[in-house]
Length: 57
Image 1 (tube, rainbow, N blue to C red):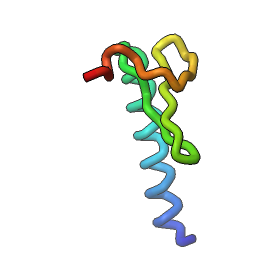
Image 2 (image 1 turned 45 degrees about the vertical axis):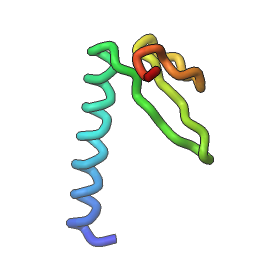
Image 3 (image 1 turned 60 degrees about the vertical axis):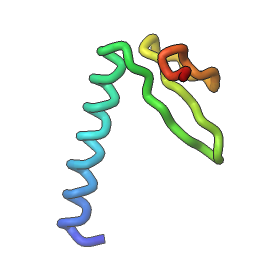
Image 4 (image 1 turned 60 degrees about the horizontal axis):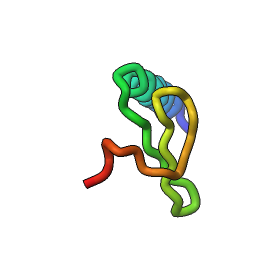
């Protein structure tokens, strides 16, 4: 990997971590997918497959 690609990846990774932290601080769950399954990281730090009520439509 080139040095510029490494630097871009480093900046992007920090931006994602900062956005995830802000979401949790604002009471918004982070949503992840792994092996086709959806997971929610709740503001209290717990991880669940149960969809939070805020995401129900």
